[in-house]
Image 1 (tube, one colour):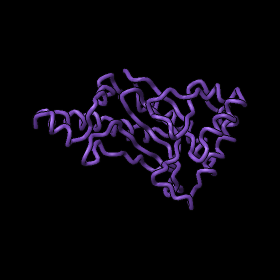
Image 2: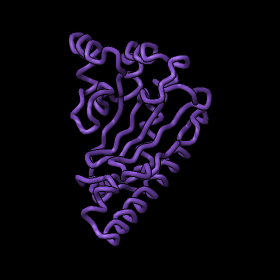
Image 3: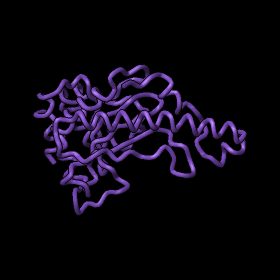
Image 4: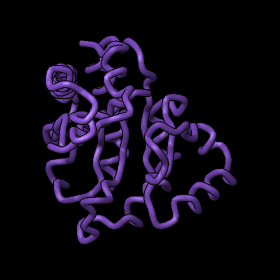
Length: 213
């Protein structure tokens, strides 16, 4: 299974609102756009379902795949989340995202549904102390780290740079402040062969850190 250049180009548009689309496009054009979204989203869901079946652990529940529309807008990315069966109420999760720039596989804290009775932002950010140990089990060159407030399209800090420089670590901790960090892999837009295998491999690596919560 694979993603191709056209899958990423789906999100190369200025207008995502159905209200605005109806002002500028014919019904036939809008219907064609919907079908294009559904076709790529069906592939997206199938690849994430396949990647889940390849994971070496049964502790993660099946991925929750966000719809291609919220009813009022087309999505400007496709997204899904995976949580431990014992941590379904926590804001922390593993996630996979497809946008116009890249495919992302990462660890995050879902702020909009945060209930700090289950896991506080401070407790989640304490995972930063575990990064040196965890990084010995992966290739840090594959990873980047960033603040939750940064754009998903921004260029992020290489994990290797973060790990090697205490000053960068201190500045990053100050930057995230009351928010949280995200950590993951960003595969650039284009042909991604064996996408389900790549996603599963990186999810398995990130799960090693996620399970330390």
